[in-house]
Length: 106
Image (cartoon, rainbow, N blue to C red; front, side, top):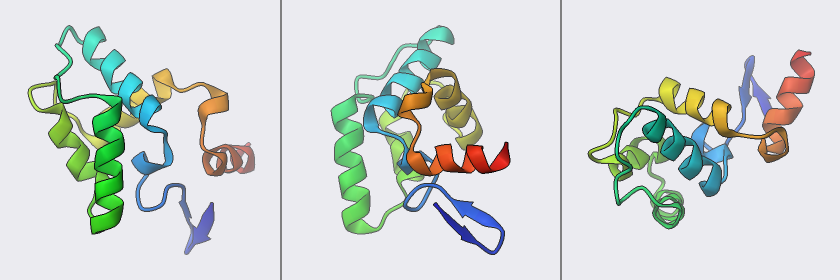
């Protein structure tokens, strides 16, 4: 975790990249199911992992590219994905940097 000009940096580049592929996959999958939407065939843990590696190699925005894996699903925005992650993630699955930030805020 880094503090730069009053901002905490949680992920490598973005909030989403701080979470594991499994957490991202399961959080959005559960969100779609609870919204009575089909989970796109492109939304898989392997696809998320491959996309993450590509984004790192090409210095691309993971948060923008991950939306493409949700083609045909319910609209994905950062706030909606953040809420889906919050509803799914267990405390032991939180990235260490985010756990440290939460502790500082207590």
